[in-house]
Length: 101
Image 1 (cartoon, rainbow, N blue to C red):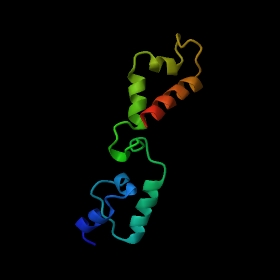
Image 2: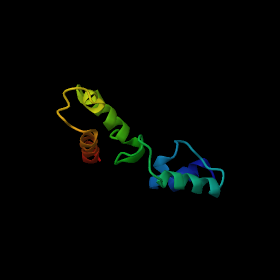
Image 3: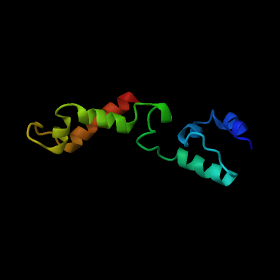
Image 4: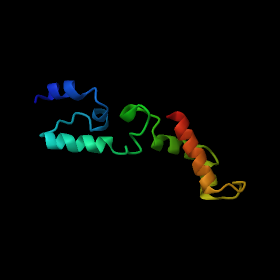
């Protein structure tokens, strides 16, 4: 199959956005393997609501949260966390992630 034909045929599929850009597969076996991997749990960089191109992925959300003054210290357990447990903080971070998609 020609590269252009491949892209035209599969570019609308959801799994296609999850594979490396400009990737062409040498056989159906390789294609099926990539599709299975793409359908598996996406990594932190690709789990945004819009897939690979979504800037609101888990990694970005977590890093943004950690950069807010006081959040890292709260997670680390420094004084001033007002008795919050890590579980409570993790639930708060998860809520932010869910709200952003």
